[in-house]
Length: 637
Ligand code: TSJ
Image (cartoon, protein in one colour):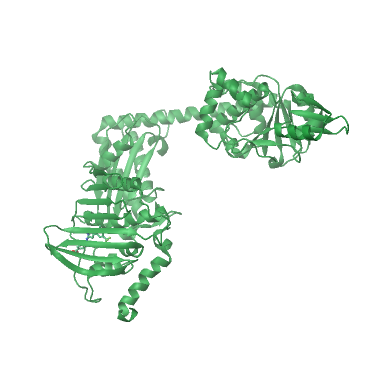
């Protein structure tokens, strides 16, 4: 077999063999992501043909056996014999790495081969169980077939006469290469839909044989349709507008609209590839927007009380899609996933193009301009008000916190990480905790008064509650928008309550507070619940004493000893300080329950149930004494 190959073909085999040896180098990985990348890779070729102005229809078929077909109505891949290789161009395209660029693309201008993409059809061939091509060209139909990673199964063959023009590829990813070869219809669907939004004159048909479904994507208003889709849940403030600017190296399209939302939605693309991390074009867009609106405000004397609008004020409520096409030399990406464009030339060009267009838009559409300016000042006012509220609450915590903080019995250690804050219910327990603690690392805050239910409380109400205020002051991070983990004064915050319903209730109130106002503390695993024993047993013969936490432990002890005196601990106050230390506070012997919020939504719902009006549900929950969503029942230390 080998002897039949000339020098050229041996090189070809080596080439594709290299791809099969290290597929990750070419397509990122051999999991689902890499697999779907193959589809994108093939599709991009048809889109190139569309961008060059020769195709306006693409049909993608997903078959039950996970083979994929992509067909376009373009010029058809060139089949003529290459003067140097003496082989049909089409064969070389599929069997040589990086052959794509040589066979056109320069003419079209914007080759889609940016970032991770554009590795070429030969890579797909190398990683396919089979790949078949049909070309309709010059009134004739040709075919060429490959198998087993790019070996020729059937050379270029004239099939017959046709009126069609275009290219069709059918391929199936190689099981020997990919961890999975199951193509996800949904991923293909979304890819095609997005591509259709970005290319308004293109019609894409998706024949999904896995789901017996056929969909045609054609959005004749392109980015406007896209912006409307992205804001379909929101109330419109300005109608969407579309802009397009071209020079011989770049083509910039962008659409935007404003809604009453306070979010900022900006999506950007370079040569049809989404740039999730933005980059130069997004930066240019933002600079232009900020400057154009501020200049409009100044020229029309629309300033509001000396406030200067920042970009983020101006962009509240905006939804924008930016799609640029650039020539290959500007396709520079950075970041881990290569999804951030980095080209100063692009930034400057986009900035200027958008600034000019926007100034024109604002001058021509005074009504919308005023709406946007008004919205921006509203955002500014809201931000200033929020900041003011934060400052007031910070000051309150500082001033009032000082007066309540004297309830705190501090720990001596100057290392925050090794300090522990015990939030203790009741005076007598607080007394034992103070005496029993390790005064180097353990601080005690006794909670005497009522802790309010913070499920629906305002910040003002919270700051009027002495108990919560002392907790906030002691912990040191601030709350909500003002939360700053750097202020944290303890490595662990431990809730220590009686093992009864009242104690459980206080736990829920405290956890609700942490969840609503210092959620990060829970997420970082800083909040714990102390787990005091429920019983003490004394063997009257040997005088040995045991602490008992669970039913199983109780059974064990009862089996071993016959003359037991069992005492139920109703409250922490029933233990003397030594017992409290030994059973509940000593890091060597205690059990702590770490509070997890592994599923925030579930916890959220549960808090609503627990802290809402339904007393019965709450009672049941408290009886069971479960906490939020613990990964395990508890983490024994
Ligand atoms: F990836 C691929 F190569 F397998 C592939 C290419 C897959 C699919 C579905 C379509 C295509 C493809 C290629 N569609 N259209 C073209 N066009 C050309 O390759 C072509 C045709 C004519 C000329 C010319 O200059 O006359 C230039 C080019 C690039």
